[in-house]
Image (cartoon, rainbow, N blue to C red; front, side):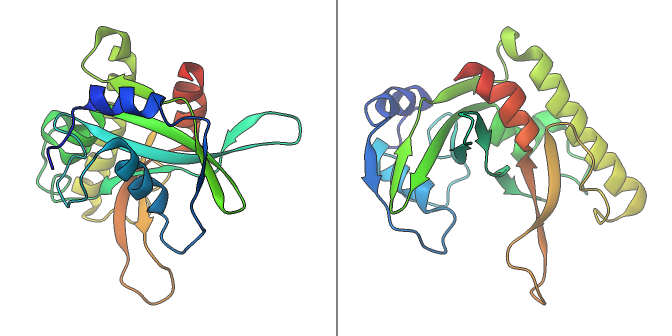
Length: 195
C-alpha cells in the first residue's frame, strides 16, 4: 500500500469527522490512532512517519458539564533517541521530524464509540508558525542542555513550555524509558485556537 501525503490524510479525515465509530475500550492506548490510520489509508508499519511527508496524531478530549472542551492527556510524540545525548540539533532531531508537518485529530469517547473531530494541520516551516517553532526548539534545547550537564534526564520533566520529556510505559518494576510529549497547555493554547 502506498503511503499517503499529509495533505491527503487531512482531506480524508474531513470525511470521517463527527461520525460515531464502534471501537471497544482496551488496554492499547494507541488503538484510536491505528483505527484512524485504517480509515484514512495509512498503512501499518514501524516507519518514523505515518505519511510520506509528515505525521498524524490523535488525542482525546472531553467536554465538561459547563460545555468547556478540555484535553484529557498530553500527546505522545516519540521515544527519546540518542539525539539528546549526541548533541543533535533540533532541526536534525527525530522529534523535529515528527513535529515539522503534522495533523492533529481530536476525538471523544462515549462508551464503546469514538468520534473524530475537526483536524488541525501544523507546518512548523511556515511563517505563521515561526513563534511555535521557536518555542519547541527552545524546549528541546533546554532538555538537551539539562542532559548534557547532568548525564541524565531524571528530574527534567518540568522543563519545556510545550514539549516535555518524561517516563513512558507501565510503572512498577519495569525498566522505564523516556519519551517526548506535547503538554495539555499546547493543546489548549495552540490546537484549540485552530479547531
